[in-house]
Image (cartoon, rainbow, N blue to C red; front, top):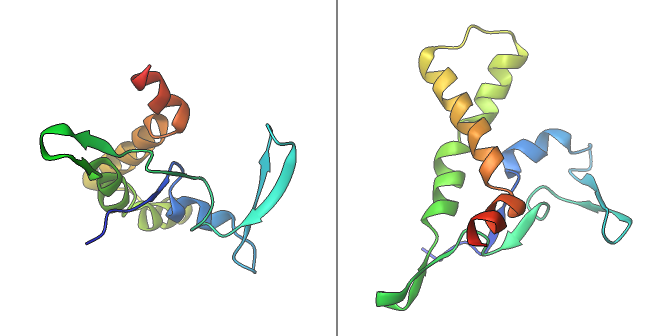
Length: 117
């Protein structure tokens, strides 16, 4: 399976909730001072943001991106729906919600840059 190139620092499953009927979300780039409309698949991404080198094997590892995509983010839609319905969350659901929220704090480019620097 090819390694993902576009790494979402805001989960696609999260930003989909803000899309209009046309499937696009509006973003404002404060550095460029312009608004743009993108699909959640193409929005809030940085190429290879979480890619880590494995020097001994002369390759890169995307396990952090895979963790975000397949673990921390995968339960978000059902958790969001449960909270919106005011359902009582199970202990497992609470754990997944906390995991999701904590992942959001550390996955943005500014946090990643702080670790690198």
